[in-house]
Length: 160
Image (spheres, rainbow, N blue to C red):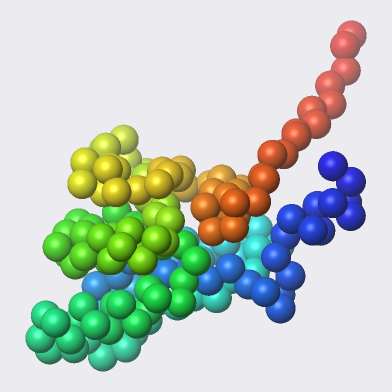
């Protein structure tokens, strides 16, 4: 792949990937970590459609309607373990709505733990991703826009 071809694969700043990251109206460490990893790539342009800092609606149906509005414009949903841990019913609603709206779902593994992802999350996810900037951007490109993310690493070494 030449550099010219590589530029065609990456979304330009004028056409960022639209992401929704699961939340329950608060920014957990996992939520913030997703954006730290995306920023670390330096070449992944995105728009966050999730609004964890907005005022949490009081009743259940208003909460769900607010989440529908946040998920509707996204291209891919990212589910973080902390959100599921604190609000499993709400995260399952987000995932089920994403499925109904034909949005791909990427589930993040538990950060710094070998604890398995809950079965309910794993069953609804289109792909599971490790906490790695390169893996995360690749899976988002693949799931959001079906872009080929095949990369080749070159390792140089000397034989004595």
